[in-house]
Every structure is written in C-alpha cells, then in structure tokens.
Amino acid sequence: MRARSLHITEATQGRLRRLNLYTALPPIMLAAFVVVAVDVHTWWHVLVLAPGVIAALVAFERWTANDIGRVALPCLTVAAAVWPLGALVVGSPNAYWGVTSVASLAIPRMPRHQYLAAAALVAFVAGVGASRLLIDPAETAIGVFRLLSGADDVFLKFVLFPTGVTLLVIVLSFVGERFYDIVQELETSREREAELAVIRERVRFAGDLHDIQGHTLHVVKLKTALAQKLVHSDPDRAADELREINDLVSDTIRQTKELAYAQRRLNLSAELENAKNLFEAAGIRVRITRESEPEARTSEMLGQVLRETTTNILRHAQATQVRVVLTASGITIVNDGAAGHGTLELRGLSALRQRIADDGGELVATRTAGEFTTAAAYPAGGVR
Image (tube, rainbow, N blue to C red; front, top):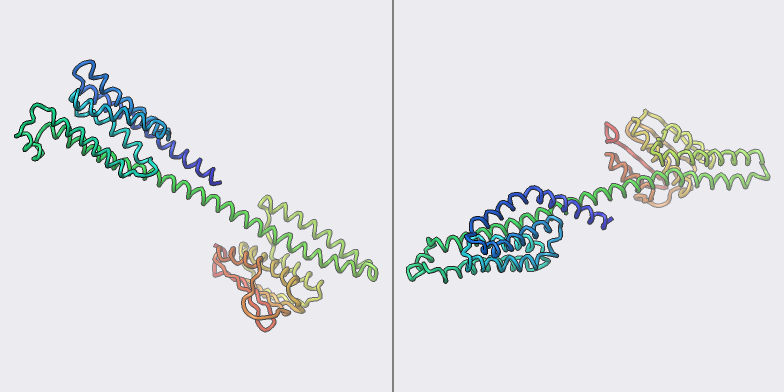
C-alpha cells in the first residue's frame, strides 16, 4: 500500500508539473526569445546566448517530467558559462536568465545544502555582474562613487537587477516546491484514510462474522453434547437436537451469505426468542420484559448485543437465571453465576462497545455480587 501511495502521489505531482508545462512554457519561450532578440547585435551573439536559453528550456521540460536530476548538472554548466560570456563578451545584461532558471528548478530538489547552493547562485550572479563594471570603459574614479550610490546604469543592469530577480526567483521556487510537498502530503493522507476505511470495514465484517459463527458454533457444541447424552436414553429427543443443529447450521450459512452480500439484518424479536430457547435448553430460567420497542436501526444493534451476551453467558457463566429488559432506548441483560466484581472485559463486547459508541450509544458490562449486567443504551433519537 505504501508503494502504491508513493506511486499515486508522484502521479499527482506529475500531473501538476505537466499542467505547468502547458501553461508556463509559452511565456517562458517568449521570455527566452526576448532575451536573445534584445541583446543580440550580430550573428555570433546568438551562438553565445542561445545555449543558455536552450539549457533553461530543457531543464524546465525535464522538471515537468519529474526528471530534473538527470539533466541538472549539464544544463547548469552550460547556463553558468553563458552568463559571464554574455556579460563580459557580448555585453548582455540578460544572459543570467539561463543559469537562474536552471538553478531555481534544480536547487529546491537537492537532498541537502539547498540554502547554501541558493546563496552561491545569488553570489555568482552578482559577482559576474560586478565584474562587468571592471571592464566597462565608462567606469572611472567618479564611476566608483556612482556605483556605491547605486545610481550607475551599468550597475543597475548587470548587478542590481539580475541579483534581485535571481533572489526573487529562487525564493519563489522554494515556495513552489513546498506547495508540491504539501500536495504530496495531502495525497498520502487521503490514501491513508482510504486504507484505514478498508481496515475498519474488515474489522466490522470480522465482528459480524464472529457474531454469526461464533455464537452458532458454541450452540452446536452444547447441542451436540446433549444429543450424545440422549442418544441411548432418549433417541427421539436426540434426533430433535440433531435436527435443530442441522437447522441452525443452515441458518448460519444463510446469514453468512447475507453478510457477504451486505443483506444481513438482525431481527431483535427473533434474537429474543432464540436466546430464550437457548437458555431454557441449557436449564437456565429466563424472564423477558418488553417495556417498549426500540427504533429499527437501534433494534438491529441491540440484537447483536443480545446475541453476544447470550453466547458469553453460555460460555463463561454458571448461570441459573437470566433477566432481559427491553426499552425504547436500550436493553439490559442480567444473569447470576458470575464471580468477582468490577468491569468485565470480553473481546466480543469490547468490539460492540466501540461500534455502539461510534453510533452515539453506550455499552457497559459489569459484575457485582455474583451477577453479570450487560446494558446497551442510546440517547433519544437512536443511532446517529
């Protein structure tokens, strides 16, 4: 799943970068044309400036394909050579465009020393631009004063403007890369939520399967043991028990199919009758009080509580009597034959407790003075 999430997030980033390719490439190509057209004064100037433009366009295309690492070094080398040649030989104040573009795409993707590389880029652009002042014939002793005052035209075009633009572009590149990181984090979070939803559904299915088959298997065990005792002394009663076992297994198969196809619905009245028959078959006196009928969705969850509690009583308690009280908002099951005090922890009830809590209800299981009490209740309005 993690590999799949990584693939999806990379695919999302790829789509965003391709969108950048389609939307940003035309203005970038226009800017590249302007850079060359404005600064070219003779044919060989094209040979000096064009490689920087080409390197920038190649780097941008590879960046949109999430493959900037493979071409970063050669493109950066070419573009870095164009800036000093353009500034010192051609006299182009825009020749920095290539190295700034390539570096702004590559530096944020570096695994480490990103800020050091960004500072080195700004220093390189400023240093090359400043070197133009040393060879410009217009620079004299008076020009030094003008340089310091920031008013000199050469200083503005070759140092101040390229350095400022480079600094701005590299900052925006870091911000943009952080945006892609956030997109990746959001995509990963969405995938984890989907994975958790699948896990929760599997746990819910396992709980329902336990409710069906765990309950049935224990009853089958009890009835089989009873049939074995009666097979010689009361063959007819043993045959009845075996028929009930067959019917119970058939019903369990039906319920399992319904569960698999999301068609299973518990009937609380049927569960009450089934619990009564099971308790009486085990020699346990049972009294059921139906004060009122719960809502349909509440009824289904209360039926699961009754089924799980019935199984627990038959398996874990030495009960002689059971009281079941049904109200509009919940169900209470009390049985004797419980040792100890305090809160009872059973895996089946723990799973139901969480599901009922998620629906806005409460399930409590306690034992006091030799009695088990299992109570599930919902506030007015039933299941959320």
